[in-house]
Image 1 (tube, rainbow, N blue to C red):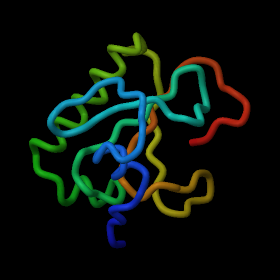
Image 2: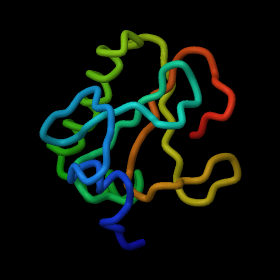
Image 3: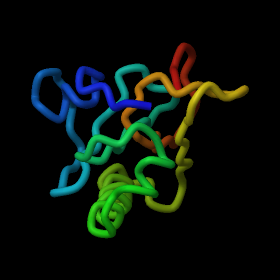
Image 4: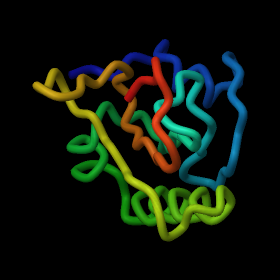
Length: 119
């Protein structure tokens, strides 16, 4: 799959689309999901142009991968859920969840479910 530079996450990274940033480092940023599935629902994305988890783990440098996971950890700390959350990474057109933005990202979810939210 070819990376689409016009996807919403690429636009957020370029400051061409708004996002309520929670945390950022040289390798990743996290921000609140605009359609939260729970009381706490953040997205963590790498700054690099990776389509999905397989692309990221295969092609990202060690520094990018470490920086991404540290950003996830810092986000959980900031949100106060560092011992009580789920991480979801949708990939492709699966039977349970479908990846809707083809820029690798993980959902950090905690708290009570909300009606109408999206993963």
